[in-house]
Image 1 (cartoon, rainbow, N blue to C red):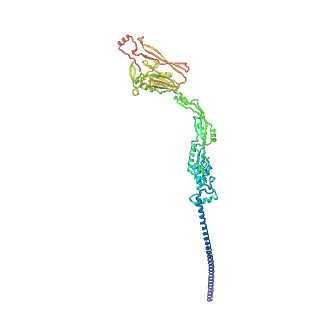
Image 2: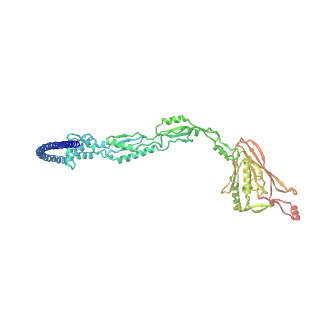
Length: 582
């Protein structure tokens, strides 16, 4: 049973193997058939391709033969044409007339010789037209002209005639031929195609004009206050405006190339700024105030304040309506005060209240030195109201170190040489000037002997440390002493101050004989007194002032003593012990 099953299974396996083998054989046969078919198809396609290739080669050969024939024919034609064109080009180049359809600024100069062209241009006023400049206008009235010939856009008649002929008559014959052929259908205006614009020339002239513009708009738009003219001035836009020089150059060049005879540039760059009139109003606004003297007794002047104002609204409106670079003048409202600082200062020392001149021409050199030195010491001294002048304090002690020299003076009735001798002439001259100025005498001492440079009682002797000469400024304004000498040896002392009422002083003097108490018939001197007579401006005497009394001795040699006087002196053994101040 088992064997039968085994034989049955082996039989099945062999059948399957046989079936598979048959299938492989069948598939292999089919593959060979397919490949054979494909090979046949490929051979057929290759045969077709080869046939087409042979046909294409035949066609190309035929086409090439045709092309060669055509090219040969064309070459023959071109050779023939080139010969003709060359001949024509040569004839054109050698021609002495312009080409057809040649114009100069619209003037037909076709087929004319250069001379004929020139004559036609002259007849048409060509040079006059070429000389017509380009007019350039800029803002602010600035302008300039350009010579169009210099700029390269206008030709003279000679140059234009030559240019018309040179068109189509160059060294390149075929280029001339092309120009000729072009002229058969189109017109050529040689003047329009000729311009060689000189931009450097345009830029240079534009630069000059821009400089003039800048000069016109230079300055400042700020408000300028002129109190003397009572006005505020401002120029609208000054220092704030400009023009674009490159834009001007570009516009001018384009206008020149277009054949235009004028060009206007109106663009201004920059925005003008209006002054701050309200702020300026507050700065200038002031109420008038009189000048016055300070109340500290210094008579220092506090200056006046001038009233000032203006209409700020009107100023703004005028500015807005003004043209650029127009000057706007705004009036100031000035109110002058009643009293000015100048008038107050002018009151001080404006009047000569009193003066005196004495002569010292007979004095020696040393005495002259002392007088002139003492005069310089008192010159310019100012006394405020109520202040007292001291001669000794002002001049100082008379010493050689101070510059004083020895000169004649009196001591104990004798003539001696003393440092500072002669300065009493200065104090006496000052005393007279002070009396005429109606200043109060504080301290005054007469000389022991009469002086020869002033009337009696008008002198004032001084010595160090006393006696001193003093006077007080009893006026309501300061006074100043002005002392000077001249080459003629005249000493003048003036009192400068403020004459408020026009009053004046006249001096008189009264003399009394003085007799010796023992020898009562013998005159030994004089008593004397000066008197001021004060008058108002109308000549009415309003005051009489007695000056300090003074006594003057006769010189010893001038006294006429009786014989008994000399006998008494001889028996007593005494001498004259009189003290004299020099």
